[in-house]
Length: 312
Ligand SMILES: NC(=O)c1ccc[n+]([C@@H]2O[C@H](COP(=O)([O-])OP(=O)(O)OC[C@H]3O[C@@H](n4cnc5c(N)ncnc54)[C@H](OP(=O)(O)O)[C@@H]3O)[C@@H](O)[C@H]2O)c1
Image (cartoon, rainbow, N blue to C red):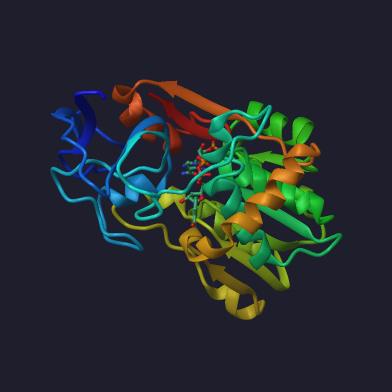
């Protein structure tokens, strides 16, 4: 049994990107296991934009209190147990699947794949419709766009580098990609969606969402998955709601935890798509617990392609 538990504790609430010292490394002894407890060794941590939100505000989960261990999803191995089964808390037992790495359970077959799956269910895609996905080379967006292709949509991804745009079109099969860092990105988006947009799988908010809403068709749907452009700002990005009204859009926000009862059903479908080559994924892996604060910042500077993971 290991004697020391290493932790990142929240020392101060960040303003903008995380500053050195907002999260601090600490160590404490691992206490003796009691009946009803299990000991897990964390192998990988999932790095998610929502962690930045948990560091400052109460939302769908309470903010992490100052001084507490930072919350994260992860992949762990039970190394000792005095619990007949460890269903309680957030534990989810996972099957061993040949030929895939354990980390798929944090990305394509984990919360990001599930988020893409249920967000696309909300979007109700029909063959031939135009789907736009923002943060399209990220863990969630890259899967949402591929699910759109499986349903026969014309899929346009918006991402922050030419390399990311090339990955989602050449490898993942998106029809077009628009790099929002090029000054003419709005013209490119217009050229890529000559008949308007039917579905917005929204991950970013702000100016990108505004431009996509401007191009929406009547009775379009917006799966409002995330608003990452506002997470590091004091004032959350504002988006005009006029388009929603005039174009009779159906907009639905969602939190993936609401779908917990259907995770196995969705992961089975995602697993089949992956096995038959219909879904591809990529991972950006950073090594070492002490690198986790920098890794969180990578989400906001676009340093990751696909799922961002910290290996311990
Ligand atoms: N509703 C839910 O239950 C749920 C669950 C999971 C995730 N989400 C949301 O889904 C979104 C994506 O999360 P993820 O975990 O899959 O992360 P991710 O897409 O793998 O990483 C975030 C990406 O967002 C892009 N980005 C960051 N700041 C941006 C900005 N100001 N403008 C445009 N793009 C920006 C960056 O890529 P570029 O290089 O392209 O800029 C970055 O790589 C987030 O909004 C997250 O909150 C929601």
